[in-house]
Image (tube, rainbow, N blue to C red; front, side, top):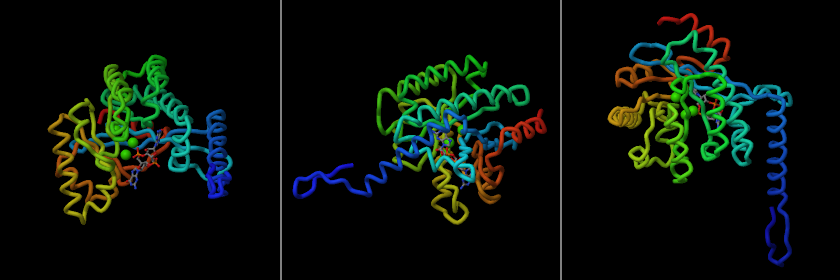
Length: 280
Ligand code: C2E
Ligand code: CA
Ligand code: CA
Ligand code: CA
């Protein structure tokens, strides 16, 4: 937070200093949240479009921050956590909680019910995350096939050996891999050829306004065709109305999630849905 002044004196910019203080303050808050177990998960169901079955759910982290009146969304703390190494701790906590819950759902869900968990590129490149993954699978007894990890295109752009090795290791143990927010970043098809994935998740920016945009419709069609030709399943995210859902069904998109079908919900509520739908 220092800059060389014209005169050669080192000056501190108040704006930069404040930003620095803010980062430290937020980091302290996240550390306390980790210590006090203030993070919890909500789950957004995913539906297979050909059958209407609920075939999975995505875990989304929330923060019950006593200092804030409301429950905090990831956008208010994940960026700060990613600038420090706190994201490593959050991702590990999320993985533990998700696998524990996924194991509890085993008796009330079909064998192909898959729980998806997000992780940041930093965690992917961290050996401790992989060790933690093995440990958690062992401790919970969750079959690896019931777990899928969601990564974003960013991990490929860094083009790091570490990241590619980590992805191979994850897939070798039988845990699924989804490419999140597909099409939103600096998409390059190179990594689709170089790397084995299980699923593409169409970014919700392509769903928003899909009804009135021929271009978006063509892009979504294209992504579905691409996924099919590569043998990947494809999930559309951010489905907000029936018109969008009907389009996806007509285009034979594999599955979908979004506010139209369900908001992210508390664990107990998802348990009830699973029990009510058992055998269907
Ligand atoms: P994401 O992985 O793309 O997650 C989907 C986000 O879209 C969620 O926001 C979800 O609530 C929202 N969403 C679902 N359906 C709809 C819809 O129909 N319309 C609209 N407009 N939005 C919808 P959320 O929970 O705020 O999460 C935001 C992002 O935070 C996630 O985006 C993910 O990148 C990150 N995140 C969430 N949980 C974790 C975590 O445990 N670890 C890490 N590293 N990142 C996480
Ligand atoms: Ca998924
Ligand atoms: Ca995701
Ligand atoms: Ca996404």
